[in-house]
Length: 74
Image 1 (cartoon, rainbow, N blue to C red):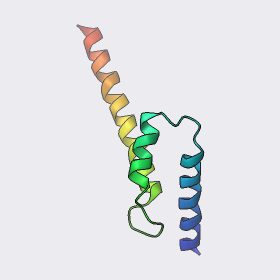
Image 2: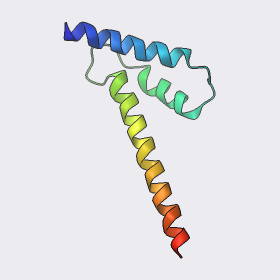
Image 3: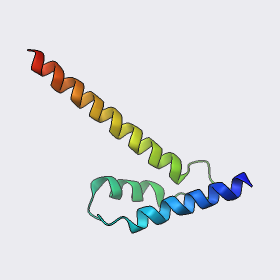
């Protein structure tokens, strides 16, 4: 049952990426390049690729914000 859920989850994610309206967005293009070779059922999933991209994006924003705030103090 869990495997069926994971297959639907993968299909849902890839369908959402395929239908994303902003084709020129750099993040979308990066995701397509990362997810395209992933076969459903493999260890590296579309969900893990997407999660990693979002987590990395958040950490970059936190670093930039911290850097900006540090500059304001001087």
